[in-house]
Length: 65
Image (cartoon, rainbow, N blue to C red; front, side, top):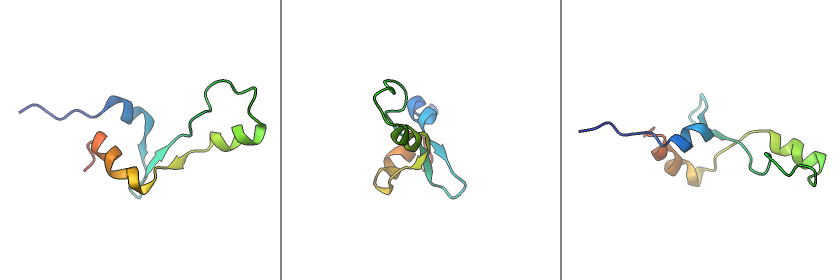
């Protein structure tokens, strides 16, 4: 039986923390930044965690459990 492949898009977008949570980046911080306020761009720069309702779906893509 062949090996199960990790979803390539997911492995580029999510990272596992030491406690088992998933880190993600905010959207809307890549282009068209001139119309966004400095405060908005600053808050988008920080990473955040994945919501618990989406954890099982993303862990399945990453083949973690």
